[in-house]
Image (tube, rainbow, N blue to C red; front, side, top):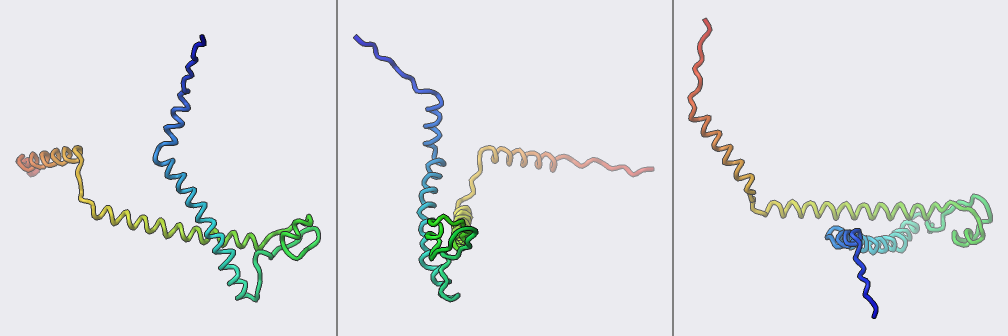
Length: 160
């Protein structure tokens, strides 16, 4: 006969599971996944649509291949130059990254602005509700006002 050994779940593991199942953590995870997908869309927008148009307007320049060779032999493209072992400053790639950042920041700005407007709109529609504490405070205020108004004002004596 073999005795069964019961293994208890550690307290920290229970807490970690509870932490993961909270709504805010799940929402954060969904936001990260959507953000990653949005980033790939913006990357394609910048590299496949915007940069070729800008390059065409400035005389056929391919921004991804603008680079400065610090040491080593310059080749036809940035990738070929790097494969040859040269040290380069990838100015065009840096420009692309800045452009992507500006587009993502601009999109996030408009999303946050729309959500704030939607939240204000929803708050404006909601009927005002008072909590029991607010009701009690209002009753106390009204009672104090009633006591003050029923009390006769003190007589003022003129000096002299």
